[in-house]
Length: 162
Image (cartoon, rainbow, N blue to C red; front, side):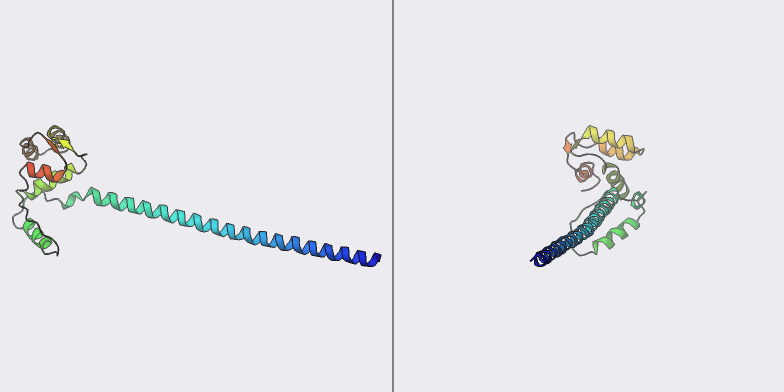
């Protein structure tokens, strides 16, 4: 009888030990999976941050423009040649006449940093601070004293685009 009691205690102890070790192994496996998942989530977060950074950088670069692309003077035939090449691109066309490509491009490059809507005084002051050329300022002196919503409205009011 004592031997069967001891035998049952030993079996119960083995069963308890096996259960504890199995639980510990399952817990260990769960912890390793949690560790791997944490690494993956961290890596995904870093990739998303990089992607946002690259998107913001590319957006900033495209909004700023390249000053070397602005014609310094109206070279007869050169600007029209480029416009003609661009006109060959498929899509909706809109006829626009430009008085001076160099003045219009310079005005656009200067006003790209102005916060619109803006009135005549704010526009003229902004351009005078950033542009030493009197011909652009004189064109802007002729515009009506009202609020303008964008660069296009200013260029049309100044008679550079019609």
